[in-house]
Length: 325
Image 1 (tube, rainbow, N blue to C red):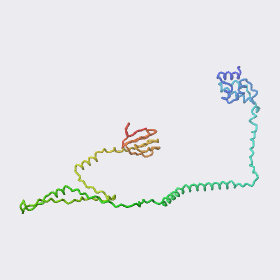
Image 2 (cartoon, rainbow, N blue to C red; image 1 turned 90 degrees about the vertical axis):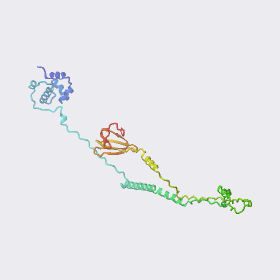
Image 3 (cartoon, one colour; image 1 turned 180 degrees about the vertical axis):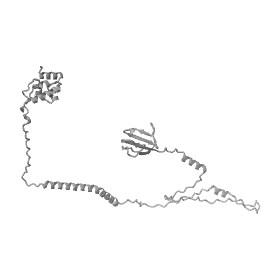
Image 4 (tube, rainbow, N blue to C red; image 1 turned 45 degrees about the vertical axis):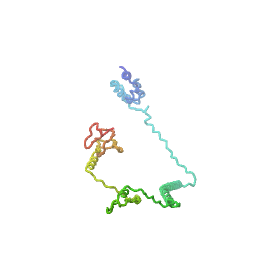
């Protein structure tokens, strides 16, 4: 009959397994597997161990070992050769000696560092408070000094010239006669015809007296008196023209109302035309954001996360008043 060890070896080689791989799978030491394949059971503590290893190894390699188990007789003596390490007492752990701090001889008190720290803190806070007081009081003192200097400076008065004062000269009288004076002077004086024409003396023309042209003296201009203007009549055509001019300018386009409702959490940035941008995170539980203006630019991480309405209606694709970035 072929030996059991040779069968184990052939079955292991047929499965392309090494002793180490078979030992890792069967949880048996490689040395014991080698002894089983060599049919050397002298190093086993008892035949019971050998019989158990044969059963495990045969089941692993699919080999029936029942015909070979009859040759093994149970041994009543059990040795611990090779397993003495299980009975060895554990190695005691080395005791760690606690280092006792050595106190150097001296008269230093343990409270001295604490006192020094408290003094440093108090000094630091005092210096900080002094600096803040100087910064707070400094500008007020400078303003008071500037105000005192301004009040002490005398206001310069306009200088009055001490030269001679001249009286205004009288304007020369215009001796030129007006046409009306000449007309009056040339008009003949009617003479009653009570004497014959021949005996009448020749008419004597009256010499016109020298006329004095009136000099208009303009009143001194007063800057505080209001200017008086002559009221003009308003004609119907002027009123109609003014009404047409007030209606003719084209009315500025009305501002649109935009509502942005978040559908889920996203980041949003809205810029109204001519205004400052508004950016924030929106959550689906928040109320819709409302903006008023002609046009808006919307920058959103997920365009599908918001719903934009213009004047109460959902915007159409390509709306000129809404630019989505």
